[in-house]
Length: 594
Image 1: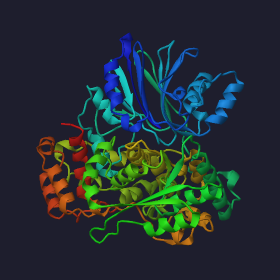
Image 2: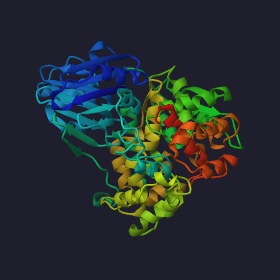
Image 3: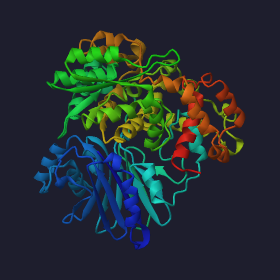
Image 4: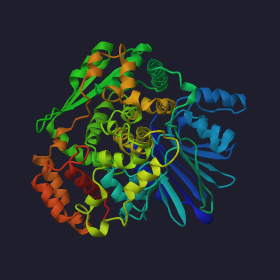
């Protein structure tokens, strides 16, 4: 797990090494174990390393193979790298390291851009061909690893964070009005390729982009899961699906133990992370370190779920760490978490993951997490209302239960000049739902949330907040083979038992029943959900800052109304609407966007 950056100048002009050094310095938190640079004429790569596989210097990056005429900068982990290494050795490739990075390099030499189809893992990488000057960028199937781009007429730059591109200079930092509409509708999610900044885009998941020396580009999308029923599985019973799901998860969890350093687990006490712990114990893992976080209560909301995480830890004999965050750490952590966000993310979970990452990184460098199960297996409460909705009514039904606000209400919050000319959020959902490969309204929603909303909310949240502390987070519920299987499961089995029914039933006898039967929980951060005291003052200071006034995104009367009663206005899904506005302004101000 690392951070990468690079530049390709068009027309043969030499890349700016000084620019690349500034960009790479911004990535130190993602790779505290080492740094490297490589430049050759118009192309230059920078890298910050977090040593997980092959801890020696032979695994350093950027990695160059003069014989093959290739250089690679890689972020992520290829779980099947040992198997691929053996396969590549049989075809005549010779290795100088034991790293998965070199496997990526040799795999590209052997299979070209199709190498990604051989990888089981999470990754973003850049490869340049010395002979042709071609640059190839790729991202994993579920977009677990980020890759941002600043593509202009004379060059393209890329990096693991938006901040690294900003450090490079020359970025168009004007607000993208369509992205702003997405942010205000999709709980801060801005789907690829857009970001909130006009000049920065992100490579979509499951995409390989080829950039020629003259700046022309072409994209290949190499994976898209089917959310339809496969006739080959027509005779499967509900129990068959439960067993298949558990077996596939078992493989996914075991894959994510591949490491040259110890691997822990973020244990929330919910069924998802509890199953990860249970399956690791079943596989014979001993001395497993698990970590849970809790906060002080506020506004009548409990701030921890230690009861359940402790139950699981005791059942499976883990070395458990209960991390209770006192109020003195909370307030400064808000700005620190915002600074760690590559894009503004409204979820209060960000602060929880940031503080958890800080403490966990003192014990381990790699953890597994239960993120993703709710989107993949129908765990949220906006899915049941879609059951039985005709396919042609799916867009309206989904919009009604999922959108933070409908288009007509957008003008109640945004100033007129910041309104997009059309209802872009609804058009986006209509386009996504209209694509083939999703059988029912529930299937369409699950596919959209798995391949889009999940990528730019929970997945990005976990990556940003853990990597802020040089901590690698692995997500077995986003193993692409697990996602493919889940897409085939009939929706009624997912929605059973209040959501994730097929997983809950599969987990009976594997994890304690108390964990399965409990009310669904989240990482609770009451101080943000119930704004008061210094937290409310931080929000007030942000929204009344002169920079916010000059930008003029939000209607002053709307801001004043929310500040007067800060916890009254909630989005459709119950989030604090005032925090949504403040978080965006906080991110823009903290990143110097004027």
